[in-house]
Length: 147
Image (cartoon, one colour):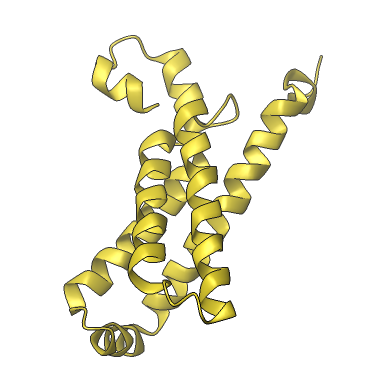
């Protein structure tokens, strides 16, 4: 009997590792923001952003981060995080006179690029999407496109 690891190609394992590494920053940041909600709301207020934006940011980071990590609606989660990274880069990290801001800008663009690759490739065969796709026949076409 073959083991689970031997059924997968190296590319499948690399795609899983890439998804986990990409999602880690969002899961960690979302958890950190949620853990100290008062400080988060205060920080967002200093940036001119309301509490609902803070809540939406936390929900996006945790929800889409989990989506990418598990590969459940992975394309949708990756697209949401890619757009979030582009918006963050363009709205908050454009002071290129600061080396730190330039680094954050480039980091956000790089993460967005990785997420766009996931949108194009999907979550791969080690994912909830793959499991559902292979076991369900009645999934609507629009939902299958997200998997």
